[in-house]
Every structure is written in structure tokens, then in C-alpha cells.
Length: 60
Image (cartoon, rainbow, N blue to C red; front, side, top):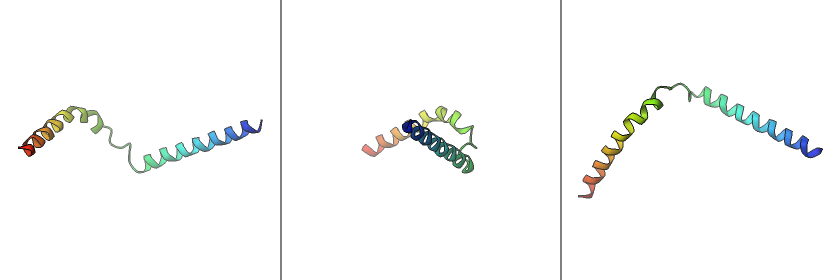
């Protein structure tokens, strides 16, 4: 029975830690930019091909 009380206490402590981390992330502005992640995938290929061309030029 004591083990159940320990596990309940640990789970509540863990939930409070996750809640504090969520509020910290929200306070620092991590959830403000919702547009950029949706279009980042569209430009990722262009960036990677530009990096490949640059690395190809560096080899010669």
C-alpha cells in the first residue's frame, strides 16, 4: 500500500514539472510563430541544394 502512495506522489510531481515546463515555454514565446514551421519544408530543398553546390565548389 505504501508503494501506491509513493507512485501517486511521483506521478503528481512529474505532472507539475511538465506543467511548469509548458508555462515556461509559453512565457518565453515558443508558441508565437505558427507560420514558419509550415512553410519551412517548402524551402528546405533549396537550402540543401545550395549547400551541396557550395561544398562541391570547395572540393575543386
